[in-house]
View 1: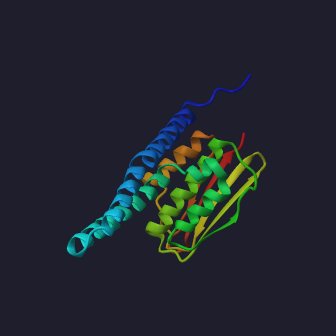
View 2 (view 1 turned 120 degrees about the vertical axis):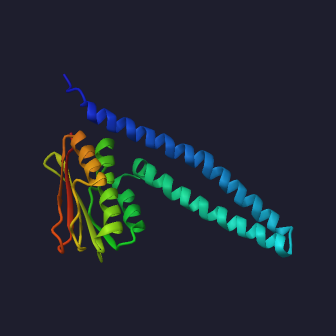
View 3 (view 1 turned 45 degrees about the vertical axis):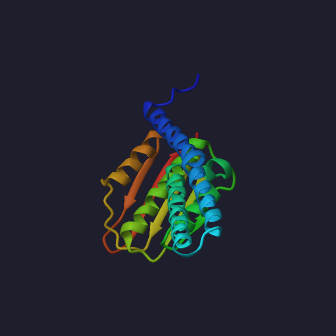
Length: 203
């Protein structure tokens, strides 16, 4: 007899499914329409001269920037790369986009259960968002290890510390981890950097 999934876990799964659908709608809808508009403006610019051509070119460039921002937003809403390729490639993409130099020192080679992968990803996502926004760090490190029936995720930086575990981002993250039967710990003494660690059961 299987143990029923906790209500909190079902709520997290429902929220993730909503994120996935929203990302797909943005990708298939708004992004595609913007791409078509950029192409149409590019073609129009070839037939115009003078101020008209300059205005069309400027509009095309602005639309291109809007499309890039929308693509970034969609990627933050739901990481399609995680579902398609797994935790390693998704974390590599995430750390590449982080403005603070970040290395992934360890990550499991195989696939983990989907809910576990999503939990690990969002731990790193939220921790790196805090690193980029508040830590004044020079570097950060991500370590993910599967051992003893659980996955340990740790994000550390060499910044100023002082992170508030009761803040909305980290509090929401702790709730997400707890919904999977795990535990989130934040160690952030002032002046000595921050370490965010989540232990997530893999069963």
